[in-house]
Image 1 (cartoon, rainbow, N blue to C red):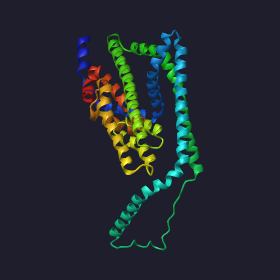
Image 2 (image 1 turned 135 degrees about the vertical axis):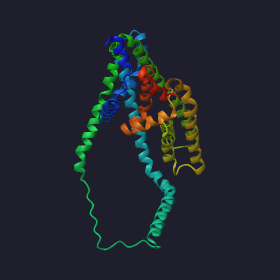
Image 3 (image 1 turned 180 degrees about the horizontal axis):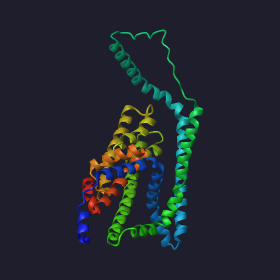
Length: 358
């Protein structure tokens, strides 16, 4: 068989669907069992993209790349420690003041609880066909087995130590990604054949631009919503408005669940402290800012880079949320957008890229 005939034979060969299904199953299983490891690598990549402008600025100031990367990582660790310390102090302050709020919160929640208990009682009575609940048999013996905390302790400690060990790699991964990023990109391109290297280089560049736009866009939109939320909560005299506004603003960016998550903090601290009109005003402010951010600001900053249709985004959130939980919801959109860029530059996968696109 001549070379041209062999090439035509390979080009017209039908895909082997059993092999594709097995390969996809193996890939999903790998992602499932290596959840923390892969999540740490992806989070480190996002942080490296965030710190790249800092390293570039230090390089412009004649600071060596290794030293600049170390300074950027130290700034990241310091910022993380500062946020954790501030959050811990505010949480401690809230817990210390919680007894003062518990009476007011209880007075608000109690009527709803009583109505729920009455509804349950009436439902049970209707199902039994009597006005009063039936008396349980006297000779009924219920045995409940509860595992001791000593049995659960090794499992919890092992899981916690695994997570801490995985998270401890983030600063080192970020440092090496900053110092060896250009080498890794060039080496990755060299893995491809000569005719495909330009497409690989272009694809990696588009993915890098998409990730930078994703991070910067989310930060700017979250910062705007947080600032306006803090101002509104301060005017409404919401307790801890300077913390609640920031939490509500950035949680509002979580796809589909953002509106609900953004309301939890202001509603929790406002129960018993604000009047019904004030609480309603806080809820309306969260809803309006969420809709403004998702429907106006988010497409303006990120729409031209992501180009994902709503169905693809929803499916991606369901899949990665099922696979990795909360971390999957955070990483679902950039992972799916990167997949679309790859699909668009691989001829055999372009139909899948078109399906993901707008």
